[in-house]
Length: 115
Length: 116
Image (cartoon, rainbow over all chains, first blue to last red; front, side, top):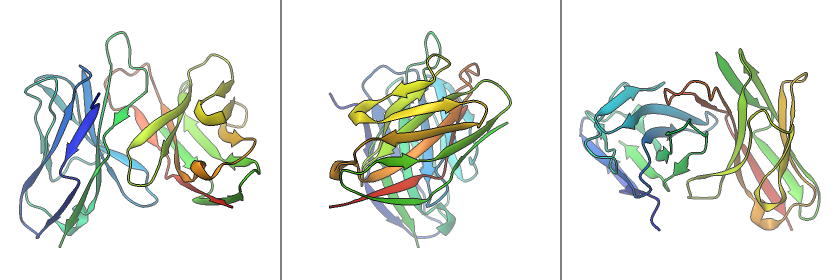
């Protein structure tokens, strides 16, 4: 029972490089989201999706892009990495049918450093 | 608008003593409230949730929290700390009537340290 799987777990980039963080879930969840975690700031929502083909911006979307072509996958793209994007990124998913329960299922995180 | 404040960034207790992690929230509607736990190098896991039923909510691993509307608080407690409780804890407020998917607001987190 894999749950939510994120890759890579660690990545170092140079300023201006692009990359994609992968997220896959095997629970048939409609809702998927990306958060970033920075010390003392909790988790902040970057982008989210309520189903295949539907995405929307969260609190801190600038510099990131997402797509949702299947129910299972929700990749996060960094278009031109900046040092301010150094953070730990979490993918989370949830059921949504019948009402959002508030329980998110998280991956183990991807730690990104931008030099 | 909604917000959540965790009053202590770090809490240190001795094994076997009580745990109290404090959370205050602000909300313009009747909120739902959650506590999540994050062990080192892991994702977050739901500990417990309040959704307008009983004000005293029991969660996993002996934790519980009490919703106090008059004090706008949702403090997390445990009678006796265990070494395995050392982790970071997040208080979360939500409007579950908003089904748009962007309704969770996380507090800044409280790191719990347990001394032997």
